[in-house]
Image (cartoon, each protein chain N blue to C red):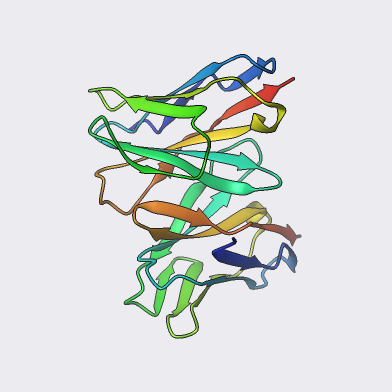
Length: 113
Length: 110
């Protein structure tokens, strides 16, 4: 079974621009979560989607948003990019909203200049 | 506010030795405690996990020890190998969200 896939793998954007990242969960998984990983702050939870509905949200500004489609694929959008948004953005999927085992994708490395 | 504290930040172990990484948490509402392994350029990979009603779980060379009263849990890697060299993260789950420790960079010397 294929793992979690994320596209693109690398992205360079300029301050003020917006960006959309994509995540395809493991086949059959209906829950998708997003995390931001930086050297300073570590791994931080952004939000979780299950059955196209946002179930949980972390402490990030409204510039960070996401959505999930009927096929469980998810997108994350960051508007008005800031230098501090440079990070590895990780997507993780699990079977159900209440399931335990969460599997991560390889991430999208976003650099904001 | 760091809800999950992980130590040490880095660890050097000789091949064949035991690697021990510790985590402490503050919130008693956490209901699931996984450990992840991350290699450079890769996403974290689920290694082993435990629920708070179990004191120990072993899978191959990896063991989680869990002390609910002390609000601490640890990862033991037996017979450590150079291929185990990676960054390890503990995590705790509350209301569906995983809260991660800061990570431990493990280096296993041949």
